[in-house]
Image (cartoon, rainbow, N blue to C red):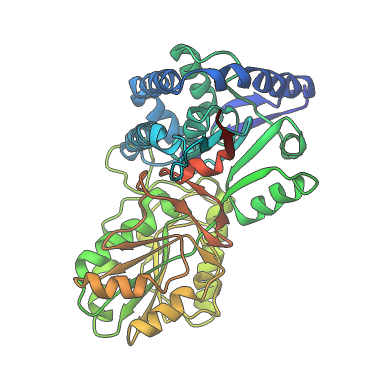
Amino acid sequence: MTGSFDVVSPGDGTVLLTRGYAEAAQIDDTLEAAAKAQGAWRATALEDRIAVLRAMVEQIVANKDELAREIALQIGRPLGQCPGEIGGFAQRATAMLDLAPEALADVRPTAIDGFDRFVRREPLGVVLSLAPWNYPWLTAVNSIIPAMAAGNTVVLKHSEQTPLVAERMSEAAAAAGLPAGVFSHLHATHDQVATMVADPRVGFVAFTGSVEGGHAVTGAAAARFVGMGLELGGKDPAYVRADADPKHAAENLVDGACFNSGQSCCGVERIYVHESLFGDFVDAAVATLGAYRLGDPMAEGTNLGPMVRAANADRVRAQVRAAVQAGARALVDETAFDRAAPGSPYCAPQLLVDVDHSMDVMAEETFGPVGGVMPVSDDGEAVALMNDSRYGLTASVWTGDADAAMTVAEQLETGTVFMNRCDYLDPELAWVGVKDSGRGCTLSRVGYESLTRPKSFHFRLG
């Protein structure tokens, strides 16, 4: 055996389970099986592929209560909030399967007598999906289900924090009747992942994770022309215009900052509020934060659980501390949250004012339950500050004026713009980042384009 890893449950610090890393021979066998299975899977009629994938999804939904419990134990999200992820998995999978016939249909230009001309989307082969722990079902589904619908086979390497998700997916695939080799998983080290990325049997790499991880995957692929989709970090901004309801915006943006303990690539981390509403917004946001209950994720009534690791929570606390030392004001009394303490994964939520873009809390990804709030004088200042970031995943505008929101949205350097909502993925819309938030696209019919290649057919008849 090449070694093993422990999964430590953030809620109580116990070792939940131990798994061994795959041997080199197992990795080779898995990739070979996936490559060999892909030909027959590709030749399977699309409607038959869709049917068996729907059965796989049904297997997962049938076990949603146990799977939700496993999410809470592995990452520390409050148990009451975990069934929604399984529901979201099913929603995204169903939407992508519903879109498949249209997205994968031949594209036919204007007819010309005597010729048959069309473009067909063909699968890439073996898709290596590298999935993160923070939304272990939701992030994985973005590539896995559409990849297989398109005729690819999939090898999943999930985070070491959430290996049960990969194992449960394999169980569901087998129970649904997917042919051997069409879907498989491996527990692998970073070095082993790099080897797989460089393997010529891999036709596409779908990575969701940090910017640093994206650079590592790109480096591993440097000697190949393999396609890659990179869903990376975010420092997502929100703008509360002068005509917005400050209480409604505050309640929703606090949720966008704190859900899953802020451990979301599209979580709200920067908030710009028109100066006329600044005081009302801040008061409403502080009141909302005061209603949070930080505690054991398995306990009823907890709506804010621990972060995934103590080191992650300490990094968030250090970012807040540095901001305060630079002149920011922290508005939430962290001592009101009993479990929050240095060296603990339990991290109190925080709202900061008197911040600016020289501070990491307004420039670098926090990935914790913290938001910085700045007043702005008008739309122009808000747009400039929202774009002043190396990230560009999502942004939100809070207003009663849809035309004004569109004017702002068209100027924002981001993959998704929301109006009066945030921190949400619509599976029928493209999920895409700009700048350091990644490249490529998942979800929607557009997402199928990354998982296939166009092939043109130009036949002269007769």
